[in-house]
Image (tube, rainbow, N blue to C red; front, side, top):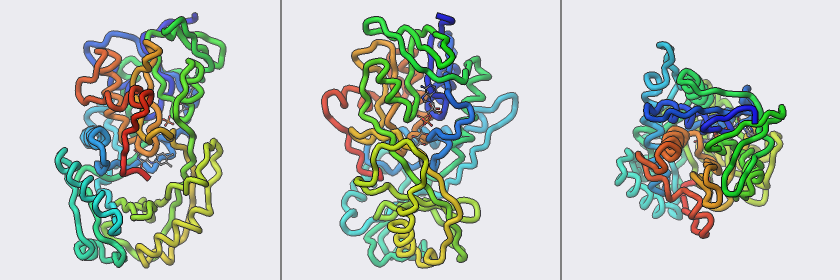
Length: 392
Ligand SMILES: Cc1cc2nc3c(=O)[nH]c(=O)nc-3n(C[C@H](O)[C@H](O)[C@H](O)COP(=O)(O)OP(=O)(O)OC[C@H]3O[C@@H](n4cnc5c(N)ncnc54)[C@H](O)[C@@H]3O)c2cc1C
């Protein structure tokens, strides 16, 4: 083996770099940390292609609390991740999410709202009349209610946040290498090291899988099957001749979303299940815009009848087919491999809390700040999904 490192993190985007920051920031952790990232341009990772929004409107305690810490972290990121007085700014637009419900979705919205508020989230429930008053540009004729995040929710520069984590981690002694891990070495229930695409081999004490859609291949090399697929998500940027004031991140009852971005808006939708196979290409699914998104936008906001689609891109979710929640922590069959995979559509906002949680797990053998045990492998292996009702 060419070298030996205490903690090797595979994948240096949002998750891997957040973990590298938190672990190297612990005054009691004395080990060495190496991040292996196959593409230092980060052009194709989910973090760089993300819609980069954060919300507290989930239906499970863990997802709500993960994002609540995310908001707190993002608000203070300039101080926390400053390097030599240079403070990162991730351009956090705290304009809230607005979930819309027809009568059919109203009861679930009310249940979710009660849980969110009990955990301290500042979410306002509005009936159709109140919605119309607050958003005069919206067609509310088929709506029963909307729930809006008054504080803590919005969108930001995910790429900037990831770079800030990475830069701070490096300033704290973390080493980054641009290399792909192509092989994992195992002795019994222990990972002993990894081989890189240049042929070098590195021994490690703990191996972390933070490889996004590369996670399945990496897990396979360790003999573990992850219930995760790479699923494509297309995003469209459009402009509208009419001004739409005070627009939050709107999640239509149909699942189509939009939020302001610069002079225009970005939008997208989860493809229908039969058009959502495992996929690794980056071809934009234009028919989604024509068949689903545009008609829905024009129905919800009549001024959107006249929009113009300016550009688009596609990225990939590491989509957890088991329950669309992250699989976090050690696998019972391997003593020293930590997983942080299957974030589906919410890994950017969860990266600060997941980074902190995994740093605690690696250093102390347990979660200290937020108990994330329920998101571990046990639920997967015992066939008990955590049903998150607010995913799309
Ligand atoms: C279109 C889109 C919209 C999204 N919108 C949101 C949103 O609004 N809010 C939100 O919270 N989340 C959103 N997400 C999800 C979020 O972006 C991801 O969950 C999150 O960025 C995952 O971060 P990650 O670091 O785990 O993975 P990634 O960002 O995918 O990074 C994984 C890294 O691992 C590297 N890698 C892989 N295999 C290897 C290997 N063998 N060796 C070395 N390096 C390797 C890759 O090069 C990559 O840089 C969205 C995602 C997409 C695609």
